Image (tube, rainbow, N blue to C red):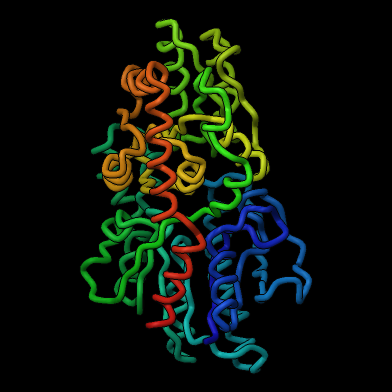
Length: 406
């Protein structure tokens, strides 16, 4: 089978040692004897730099760069322009290559959603050359943008539906015309209204490589005290990170012995450091900044409980970091309602707290601080959950088999 993967966000090989979703899928397709071409952006979404064209033959699959302009902010007009041009130029380049027979017609095209302009142009390729289009739902667009609207949640939703009606129409049209749908969470099937259509569907969470964590050991290998909480990821408007610091202040006022590690960067970084200083928590909270993935794995291996503090208006269902946390034998204190909350509860692999409530988070943290064995017991459950639902070596071969059978 000849398959194209179209995703502008994931890092490609040799840009880091963290093998993401589409890198893993490309590798799995090749292992099954299929031909893979991964169309991605000339602009690195994570590092915000233009890529050097990859050298031919260094991967077992082909990586094609679509030239696009840069952007410095994830929420900006320049990013919208970047996405539109990526989709349009992908179509123009692909059509020229196909018409001139420089590349073989793909049997199937797997598209990441977002960006929302990709389906329209990919459906044109299907109409001209004949192929099947599979949408891989990664994020809730345009709902995730509602958080930038001032006001309460009801107001945000009402105005958001008006302001982003064009995006919503694009997402509806994409779902209505797809040949199959995959998603990183059941929640996104609901958000996009995918259940209205009888096309084949498959859920594959954002996986992690368990062997990375296994090389580091885990919390059982380090002293149980002081109990250490870890947060890894972006420090942006999506995340309830101020609440973590205020909860830490409450726990300290109760005489608790613990530590918190923050690894990541973003627009909130300096503000969070300032709050920690104002709360006199410098001896408890440490900010590591952005870390290479190998160092993230080490940090998690030397922690006891993970933090997933996300604001409800972010529309994030099961973020990338969840698999990494679980693989490290870490129970998770989580603020996302719904799918992830139920998953952690059913597997006794963490606790829920109410977003923006420092007292709620403090109670959850104290449950582990006062009873460290709870973290040990739930950590074992967390690892079992990682093995069953987040292991890249299991879930991506299953996703490949689903696409093969279409």
